[in-house]
Image 1 (tube, each protein chain N blue to C red):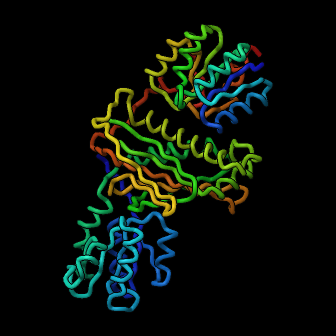
Image 2 (tube, one colour; image 1 turned 90 degrees about the vertical axis):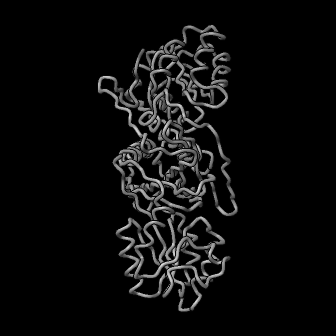
Length: 322
Length: 122
């Protein structure tokens, strides 16, 4: 399998510059994109970033001997799914840390031995691998779907990344099952309602601009985009004889108050971010977050793409008469 | 009396296709699923063309097509599927139900307008 490189975003909470440099070097060589925050901004950064893979935290963060431990308790209380890697000065272990506090951390390390985190990073953040053809295909399919539903917009796609977050971005999201013989799970699209409304009002969609204020129209638009992507995904990667080996289901848990959604699995989620910008008004833009959550089964070694002969190909939108 | 019935659970598609056809001189009725589509066809037997999605709640489009021919005994209305589905098995089922054609979404009005007008008797 030709495995693709996906990245993940990590928050680095570190006052010590040599340590920061060492962590940054480690992250660069392990496909981790670093994001820094000062102590007083950590909670607001966590609130505004819902697509993190993990946190690198110094034990003595914020100039206090146990500043990191105190902060870890707060972070773990609101974001228990995020792995936290604790940098200590002397001991690359949890010695001296209470059992209760240890629960917040995935691993402890010292800077001189940061490479020891590789196994933990792979296990907790990069535990699933993805075929390159799949990532490429998802981007192609999704861009085509977006371009069919939005007019005169530029579409920018970021490099795919994995997240451990279980938080919802924006106000509108769709969920649709994705079920084949080599994978089972869900695809989710998330968007900010106001940004979407602005584009509808500006007549950048097929929705009547006068209907922009009715949220049901916005729901319908994101729903149709979801449908187009799902259909194209199935046509490209599943066959009509595909039968999932296991047909069980698990509850999806949603808590609106905390903007939290769980699919019952600790696995990272594959995320794509698309930014659509009005060509005539760059101030108007819309971010669509797409997540694939293969919570029910994932066998990338069985991944296959449907090869369609050119003779059989009917372009989408064309009428095939019988 | 409508010439074309557009059947899709997505309001976005109903409005997009419906508005395009209206803007090009056709009269249009809308339905939200296969069950609604059957009811609208029964209420307006003058409909000449149905443009119908496959995946819909309550009743899917292929089942609707089969009931149009079977229960409603309507062998004359033209049916075109407009869907994300592209499987040969579904197309075969559609052909067996006497549908006239198949379009894989997204809808491109200009590519199909002339044929739609012909099938709608316009």
